[in-house]
Image (tube, rainbow, N blue to C red):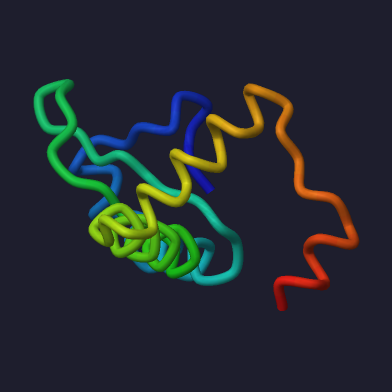
Length: 90
């Protein structure tokens, strides 16, 4: 799909745009498009795009972020909830 570095110049991306779209629609990934050697744009597969949107939504929900942090801290402290406790709480 892309060269070994994962970067394409604007000129090369323009030439290969239809091919890139076809390939990204079939496999998860992204292409960095450069202008004068610097990133100018990113072309993402639908899977990668939706994953980013989902992550943004999760991180934008303070309650969910607090719960994740609490869970990570409990995991670091090796504080696990037993199987019996899980089923009692549901």
